[in-house]
Length: 147
Image 1: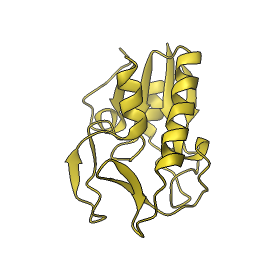
Image 2 (image 1 turned 60 degrees about the vertical axis):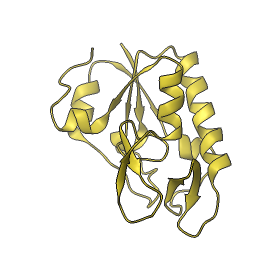
Image 3 (image 1 turned 135 degrees about the horizontal axis):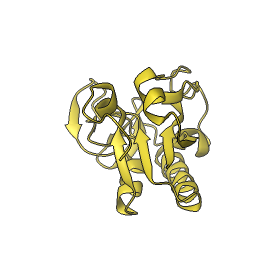
């Protein structure tokens, strides 16, 4: 099975703060499968580190009210093209991210308040008919094996 995985979950230092979200549970989950690591934000031309961003009324903005929407959407489109070109079977994405959030995202107030919603990349994948799993589901044991 061919899996697309948020690069930060596999230990790549591509997170906004220069770190990563390495998850042993995710690494174990994808073991034995072909894995394609992506970071839509980096693909869109954003630096590491970078200012954190959230979806604010449908536009990706920094806390300083600077739009990074074009970069997020460009990266999401490039990552979707890669997913389609590679004919991936499943995507495992980082929770709560304005790019990769599958079930919840931050509400745009920069107060760590969560709302139901999807990041721009997660939404593109779902709209393209690609199965998407939130990494938190793997970490919490809700999903135990690749479908």
